[in-house]
Length: 553
Image 1 (cartoon, rainbow, N blue to C red):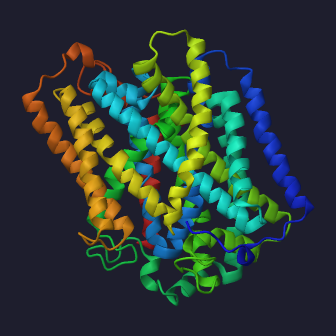
Image 2: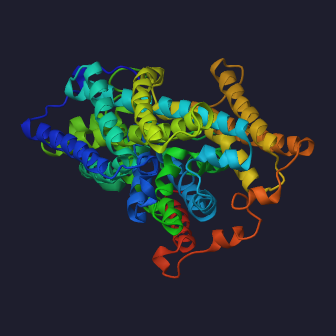
Image 3: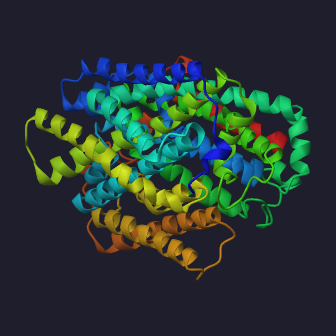
């Protein structure tokens, strides 16, 4: 994200707007202090004592993803790629969230693991575990930096706050409430932030649609924009790459819908951690599925505003300055909202950055403490030692996040940067996971080499793209193919290495691999009450995703 020229985006906030901001800060910190009283053990700090109800963890699950990447990045994609951005939700999120709840959570929750890397250690070996733990920790501080840097730049541009003040303020607030209340503080704040974010984005969408003559008026204006008619369709012209996204249906379905999506939603501990904090296995399974229902409708307040910005902000889409795609939402706030409502919108934007960063930090401190510190550096210490280490890791994660924030400066569209990270870290991890979970013969060393070489395959394609050694139609197109390459390489390596290395005994794999006794029953199990049955709820969510495509096919 490039540095913004403050003059063009400056908002004229009044005392009431700042009062709303102050009230939000006070509430967030108050939740942190309140949650602190319940922290008596490391399990309370890192997993909320596994006591959260499903509706709370479900909203936290979707809110943790509703950060800067989602709000700023998806609005930017809406303006740049049109309705093809909907693939990130209806193909690139909902099916994977349902799969996590129905198929994978029985293994995660039933095995009583405390993190995703710990599952890999039990399924494979220490080498696989350590590689995943370190790569996850690196990815989380990089993504936390995206949220923090984007927050600082937006506040500098909108409110005139110096960059360093915005960085320190955002980092300090997240640091305080996570250090005090751990995951419980993060989750309760994410539920609050979910509603605050919607309260900020809904007025932008409504006022913007009124200004352009409703949804019909918006679509007509998009037809007259540089996007044209292709910007109003999701699958048209995907038989080739002659479409706004520059991607074929193969890249969309396999690269985004399967590898990137399933790799993120089913193995990213920053998300899975919310489900692991649920009070029962059924509640854990319903967590991502409950989150899938609002996820279906989030495009109304991200993608639609991006299209509104495209047709109302003259010159949007420059490479630098005020009119980069990333500024679609801030520009609409400046042009459309009156005082009072403006304060709510700014607060909602701030909440989105903090929700994303808090999810990254809480995931980082858990993996660092349990999977690096306890596993390899200081074993067999008392529980209070690991609780203290978790708080120190929170501080370290925030400080490193401040440092990594500036890496995001070279990207005019932060979604491109994030998708590149996902193709590097999540795609090979998903391949290793899915093969290891459904093929009991897969050996421990096959787990390590599939993960490592899949990462190298994606990294190689990314470097080839940056150096123009291989041509891709867009950064996102490269991410789709990079993810696909990582997945294919990881699967092939898993099969080959398994032929030459010993597998684990079945007794060691019970509760970790599908196909052993009880595994199929756990996947298909569900409460008889329909609204608490994961399989039925998941089927409804996927059906709705398909139906929503019909008007914009």
